Length: 198
Image (cartoon, rainbow, N blue to C red):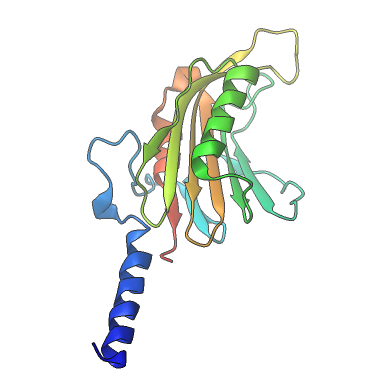
């Protein structure tokens, strides 16, 4: 094989390997628990650099948390009712994650089980367009009432997804609503997560 043909073959192989790391819409299984979808009518699409996500119009973006050297956190909350917010979402953009998506999802599951009485939570591996690796968690969280710590904890339907991207960054998204609202809204919110093609 000539040097030129060898270079061409090597280049093509590298392109194929680079493309094979990230999934496309067609790769998402039909029976997957969480699947990509367009934002519902009336929702607001939020561009956060490496990720965009949609939120219900009534969810208000909160003042930004002070970023660390490796993480930026963006939060939305529904207006408070009787001292608590009935829903919201948090997106963490981590430029240099300490662990991959699988271990990060497991750590979030352990934390939810311990501090939020989340029950038995088993992260589920999912396929997501333009993500190298992704895990999904579905659970019910019990959260104290901020204005009355002595009151019974409120139950929330929570959904979390952790994504590793090709550039080495990691995105963590959690959406939750009052248990009475059911799982539809947090699942819809997570389904709108989109990443730019690498």
